[in-house]
Amino acid sequence: MTGRIIFLNGTSSSGKSSIARELLDILDDGVFSYLAVDSFNAMRTKRDLAQEDLDAALRRTRMGFHRSIAAMAEVGNDVVVDHVLSEPWRLIDCLSVLPPEDVLFVGVRCSLEELVRREKARGDRPSGLAAMQCDLVHEHGDYDVECDTGTADPRECAELIRKFLSDRPTPTAFTRLRARYL
Image (cartoon, rainbow, N blue to C red; front, side, top):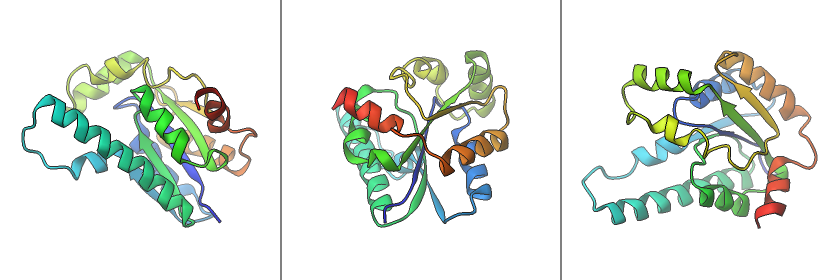
């Protein structure tokens, strides 16, 4: 039996990590693992690389991340994924390696003003990163469920997601997107 995948997609500072932590607290029908793209990026060496080499390393890292999600689910693990689909190839790669019927695709949104405020308060992200990603991450325009962390707190968003998890729509957003892109 394959595991369920709750796939949170949103910009940097949109609240994905906070929602993921809440999901781990409230989901009581299985054991969920949290897989975050930032964790995979943190495993990489930090020495300076030429831009071309860095770009290639980041692409390989993200492709490995996508395959680790698939591998975890394939052996029966339920996972909560925290990702930023800011380049079209990332979504297409996920569509090609993840079983679409097992993915609950969640759009995590927030107003640009709030993203800028959060990014500045965090101080650990390049200035303007969230604004740059804002339109790109949701460009595909199809989710199973969406939440707005500017109007709902992380627990409320997690509760909304939990309701959708027990009764996933058919076809799923990943099934529809796969038909469109692959």
